[in-house]
Length: 65
Image (cartoon, rainbow, N blue to C red; front, top):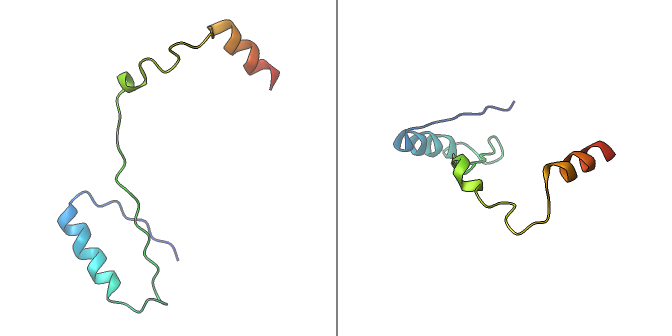
């Protein structure tokens, strides 16, 4: 069985991890994922800077696939 939890309270998440870790290792496998970093659109500013690309080139490339 696979159970996924998204716990926003860091203190609570640590308590749950501690509880789950108390079980035999062969019974429970714990995988933790890093917090998702929510970026803003402005972080992509300049992504195509100094690239010789325009909307027409992108469209042509998209239709080739």
